Image 1: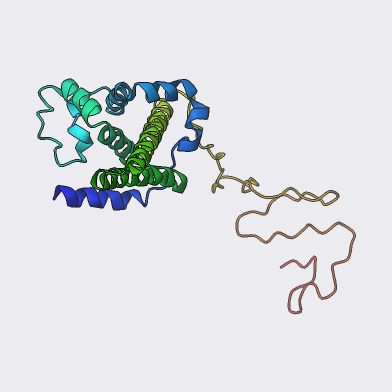
Image 2: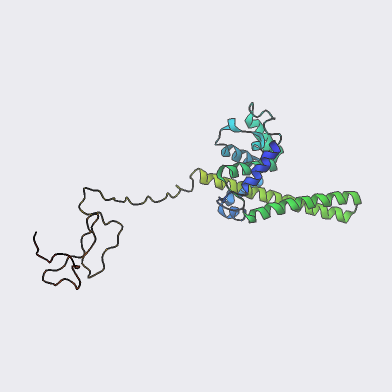
Amino acid sequence: MGSQSNLDKMQLRQNYRNLWHTDLMRTIQNDPPYCCFALWCGPCVSYMLRKRALYNDMSRYVCCAGYMPCSGRCGESRCPEFCLATEACLCFGNSVASTRFLLQDEFNIQTTQCDNCIIGFMFCLQQIACIFSIVAMIVGSEELSEASQILSCLSDMVYCSVCACMQTQHKIEMDKRDGKFGPQPAMAVPAMQQMSRLDQQYPPTVGYPPPAYGQPNYPPPAYGQPNYPPSAAGYPPPAGYPPAGYPPAGYQR
């Protein structure tokens, strides 16, 4: 059941629409001091970021944020600070990934294709380095052993760099959550509209364009009456007006 729920969450994350405040390529540019701090003191940063992601409420702490089979079975409720420190030191990669999943599920954040390529390259390089080390151990070649050591060192450097960038990305996202970048822009409130009432002589003209220049500004008609311009005194009525069958003008009953 736990593995199936984690798979469902992974499928659900593909439909998230929000983006990280900064991607992995720009974390060094946006916060260089914290990125260096995360590079040299990765477990300490992982501890602080997880605690901050939980809003400093350690009663909510679960090992690996509930995304691993061991979650909830390590006695976290009795000593959450010690369990979090153990997780950050002994399971550093899982600690960073769990904090990432926790933020993604809370804010519906998807991972961009660029970030996926960087994380995927890190994993592939680690697997290749592991395979080279096994082959060098079986074959016993010194050249292959030296090449595997160089590849392992390179994969470790990439791993530490990507984890530092990921933790800086998490920190910037929580800075945005806590309002450290200023208040979020609010949507503008539409102007109040006026409605016509039965006790008004004319309905309001709010929302209608003004008359063109040189055109007389006639008052709007009363409700239910046609809007005809008044005929000027002294001018004959137009041809065919009034229709046949109507009494002539000035006729009194």
